[in-house]
Length: 83
Image (cartoon, rainbow, N blue to C red; front, side):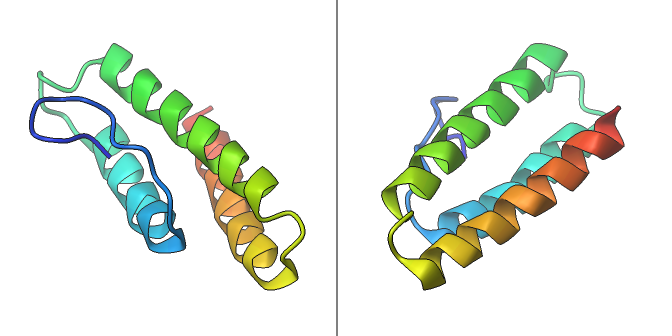
């Protein structure tokens, strides 16, 4: 999700999102002092923006659309757990 310089790397492929969701969960679970609430919120926002774009891009492809919808469902469950 983030490169070595701390810049967001846009997620493009299904594998990017699948791995990125795991990284996002790990990031939110981190107790490191360098992982601030701002960093966590930024990662979540960027992930959601990239996922929304991917869902729109693949809306006409039923197979890919289902895969991205599954990631969106997992993300929603994660966000619910944060509350």
